[in-house]
Image (cartoon, rainbow, N blue to C red; front, top):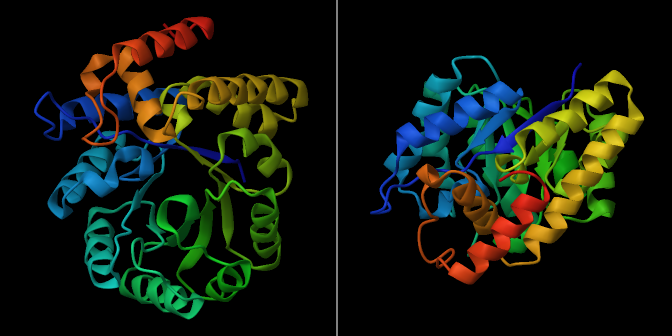
Length: 293
């Protein structure tokens, strides 16, 4: 099957930090034009700053705008199993392609607790569920053996790995090779091509908000067997990542870079990133270097 590049889509806000669905729909159209799938309400979508009702409204708008042209995942994860299940049921009703569930945060979980958490959510919906591991942000990590056990659940279809560890990603990929119907999606932008070469079904990338065509080029070239083109696109993508992320917190910087390209997306909800004229100038310099501005 063709590989799939998902972009962890930004959520757009107006000057009063209210959710701007019209601007978000414009970003959906931009990703559809590039041929990328969409992850809504993820880390790059400021999901922790959104209310329950806002997340539902956001996902409804994204699914409606995509209109089946590309697959749409939505992150239902919260700190509690109860609320996560309620949100997953809403996304199930809306008709997303897949429901991603980030590990609980703030609460320290055992591996047994994580197994119960994900199983409970997967039991509650018909839409395929995907585990979402990003321990640097949540302080909870899905150990490979826990992922292996969850892969046996009839409605858990894969995992998004945003841990940044090639060893952990390799372990998840091994599970994907062993467990039928368990797909692995890489999160780290510098490992897109490496993960595809090692059996990943695709990637879910935040950086694709700023570089949608380059991300799509990596995947298309890989699927076409054009190693040189895939490597060139990956090198450009990874280099941009290094330059941009050197300035601070990655999700907020991706949003700010996109704001520099298109102010209609709005700033991140506070306190993610305070606007800084000097930082904006540095971002614009990077964007001009990569001919994005």
